[in-house]
Image (tube, rainbow, N blue to C red; front, side, top):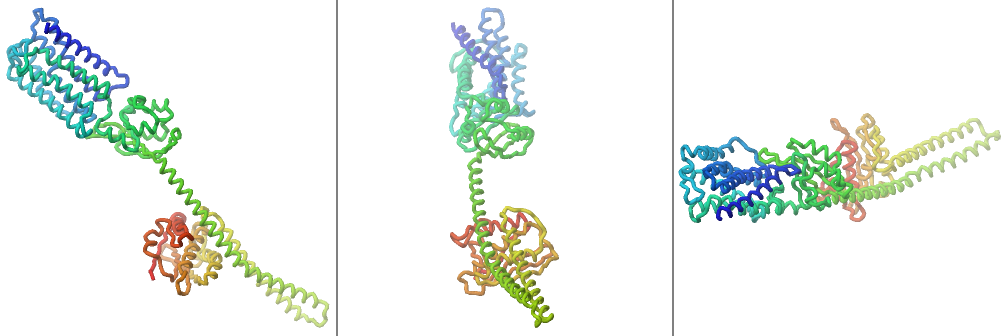
Length: 591
């Protein structure tokens, strides 16, 4: 009766083991290393249990019971090796077998040889019986027993350590693994030490409980999935999305952020090929840049980074792709997606605001120019009007003198000379007005104009003088121009942009003199160094404060309060750098 109960328990264990074995073996989505290692352990259990079933079925025959012990020997002997291998893969994600690992097989192979040749040398057991208490073991059996217990205990300790280190407490997976292997271990210790009187079938029967627990771990807590328990709780909380792909581009890991961002579910994407998934799901649509980068990163240790917009979910990401290695073992390809949608929106807002400030600055400059135009054209227009009156008088005088016999030829020549003088004066005024119009026309273009031309410092300073004359006069200031370069050397770039920059600095110099009791003298100087032309604007005001010095050229700073934007110097520095390959610096003395 006892043997029949053992037989029933062994058959149940066998059915469960075979079910698990074939379910994993014929997994349509392929097998990872953890699943393969578990298959090896299941195979060792099956090799152990099935000969014991045959032993019970053949108990009334003349077959030596030890023959069945020899049949189940390979499964029993190599079971600890498969267990420690499975634990190593579970705790390290992937393991590469090295020659040194083969040393673990020395004792199992010696044990197997001694078991198979036991009828000759009796080095495994001296006397065998299905009843454990009646077995007389040979000395080497204790070596094998200690080796088996040692491997299993090491495996259990690795599971405990791994769980405590990575989860802060036992994971549900690890608890079931530890309890599952502990049950047959404890039963085997109790029967071997004769603390409890049991048959040789008791230990494999105890594996029925282990199989049930492992089945629960597999189907309830995804034991054989490649999701590491190490960081899952942490990575689910981070704001960036990530997925991990295996060599075949199958999704093996991900976090909650990825699921939320792409509006998907774990069962829908786990184990699926990313490229195949992309063809079915618009939310996970793979664009060409992403696909090309994913293929280029294979077998590379570099990190590939690029920016990509995903219109389907209205988000923009900075995507980083690299391979994960542990001790030269490939663990997977990590795809990290940093959501920069809000950052891009903020940048766009800043650009829009900056464009608005630039437009305000440009309009302010145009307003300043209009005032200068009115002043610069008023005097020559009055002069032209006066010259026309003088010419009118001379024409009338000439007309009256034609029939006057008292008017001599010399008088006629004198009238003509006066007319020529007035014409020359008018030419000068008209030429000046033409220069003003030409300068203002060029300066009225937008700040983004980038047409590059060659121009001399003389032409540059001429335009500055024309445009700033009105502001200089109203401020009761003096502008001294010292051109030590002349027309020999030409500058290349947008002359209107450089005029705007110089005018802006001169305006700042004028405003710096406010409430400062001194002659408002400003010098505009051009000198030549070895390979550069140096244009300097010098004033004798109070200097630049230390606070302003720290931020000058680095950000938009103004000392004018609500009357300034701080954009002038900031944009001047940027334009000099970008459009003239030059530099803008300052020297100051605080008074």
